[in-house]
Image 1: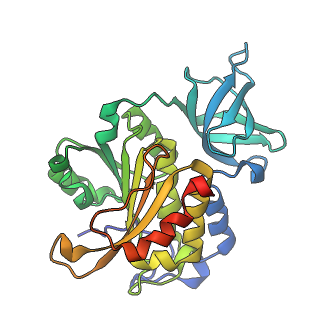
Image 2: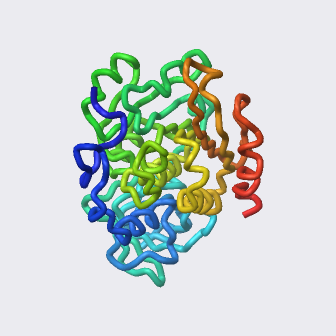
Image 3: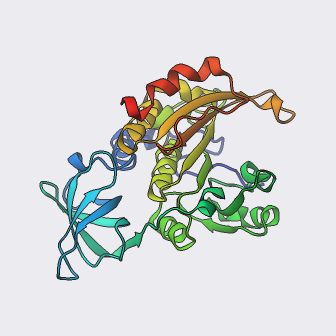
Length: 316
């Protein structure tokens, strides 16, 4: 049976990580680039992704076009290259040609797409990141929701996933890779629910306990960034309870909420209330500002009240 968690270079046969592989500058570079991009600290020639409101299109198709980043920072950006029609556009694979002022250039490998307006049907469509066989989303039809597609880096899950979700599509790749963003955009996976069982190996007491120094922990910022790029109404993440005590992971969540406006609650849920398991799991719910903060009905309020209040982006 293939592993549910993404495979990673640098692992030993026992599943542990070689310490020599944990080059902290690499991890910090990857983390800074994703939650979402901090436009005040990008460097020339960096390759970035983001959402942009088109302020003024140039008379020349090649630009430059005056845009504003769609996050709460609202940075001014000049984009060189042909833009799709639309007031809000997403772009991956854009090259920074100047950081002050911010100039971005569309490359041959870039992908730009218009973000359509939200319609009611969008809100019941679900994307499952790090999906494995798709157990997280198995019973969606019972609550009136539909699984659109599953994303996993391990292609060996395809057959099992399609057997469990015959009406959905499966895509194998990095959950925040350019090809994945293109696939989701082409499938129209906007404004719905994005869920992910992010890697728990980095935080679990039975794992390596390296926290955000573990490359597998990148599934946290990658899942958040992909949800943001698709303008998901709700992002649902699941992990081990230890993630609530990880300072770097909590800083990433806080940074994401402050930059995007998503309202965040974090809860611990006893799985014994749903199926035969004694384990407790962490659920992070990231809701669009209009939806406000939501607490799962079966969660332990003693574990999430103070956390959720601290991450209310309205108070950030």
